[in-house]
Length: 208
Image (tube, rainbow, N blue to C red; front, side, top):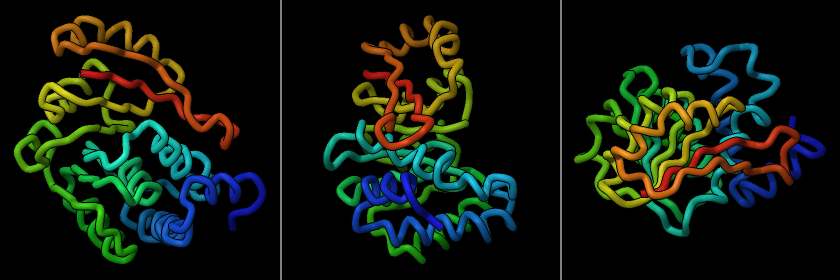
């Protein structure tokens, strides 16, 4: 049950779609565990560590953007962003069939018209995904490998938002040569949600 600061944060981020966000969390805590998308130990912290941690990234996404979420898994961050931002369109890109089946079920239950789902690897999705303004990823790969998977989807223009942990600067340093090869114009580490969450979200933003 949401209460206190977490309830306030959820109301701020999801607004009129808070009910749908609560439905999504109920799916994560039930069928998401049964199908192996979420570990049972994560249930008490689904809101703070997962759903809100992802959803606050919406503040970095331009109005009406076309977003591709690579390695969507349980919809983190793609579904959270689609719930928080009805104005954007989100393409969930996920190769594993059981996860894709679950995502289809959840999207249908939540009635999300701004989401579509592709069953494929990120590096295969360029044609199917179409033009994208933003690509997101969470817990997919270290930055050195992630840029090879995600940046081709932007076709030379747009931004990658990679949700990362605290060792992110080391990842950035290691990926330096790759970033030059991909002609990344700007690479920055951002903190979002610090006014809403006890533990804000760390994001690497790469701009082409």
